[in-house]
Image (tube, rainbow, N blue to C red; front, side, top):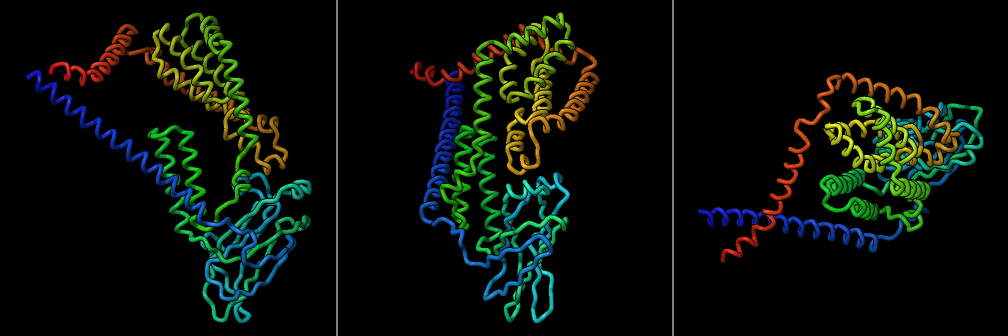
Length: 424
């Protein structure tokens, strides 16, 4: 019976091993095929020509208009405008908008155009003269044009919400060669593959990002919008990358000097072994450091010290680490360098042109961050008003023994094949 049990375990482990190997082979084949397909598409399709067929014209924001006659065009059409615009996500930073309306004129009768998104483009616009001269953003919108016989005229009307500010707009009306459904499908496919690679840790996150970027460029080639090498390089935010690189170097130096270890020990001394004073100091220290350093790296460096302190004070390290993560996220939102999204926001040319500096960003975010930190701390004090909830359910000796048992179990499973061979 012993041999039967051993053989059954060996067969089960062998089946799992074969299934795992098959999964690895499928993963590698899929990634290789996806990358090769993207590379082949980049080699087959030519770069997108900016001088595409269409009608180029200039209008002004002071109630300007332009009439265009369509000749054998099919729906949809795409209108591109270049001007002192802000991204739509930054619309709350300005009170000035540029309204663009497209109207179909057939036989002297105007009919409102049917748009896939909206009939009227309402674009947030900068206000100051310096910003108007500095910012140049291209906004594109796709419109569905009903089929008329004979070919209709399109009237492009531009209205600015601030009549005393006049600025020129470079416009291009062209037939849209990109199928909307195909574009959405390819974008969904790329994002799905990217998140599956990251969430299930099928490959390293850096490699997952490279695979996702390559697939995205290949998808652009498939819809006829292959970017040039110069355009791809311009998509890299060098300022953000350099800032994060310097921040990682600074964190590495601080880690080598034992700064985080000293801060944790100092918090324990000042708390005199009391639980809530120590947790409060750890939360405060984590929030302050995360405001000036990358919060993810700060948590990674604070984790070993926090676990040691929890073992000394007989606390559950998982609960304390979750509390530190909450305060790290709150503190990281206070400054432009506390979190990578903040770095991306502050380095955006549109944001900088509005006078948003390091001091301005911090001054506006600090009050909200303080209120969030205070609210989170009050909630934690109420939720863990019974300090016993923070303590470990099992003793440290029991947890250490359970960990050793898990290690030996893994060792036993790894030696099953060798033990079976030795019986023959």
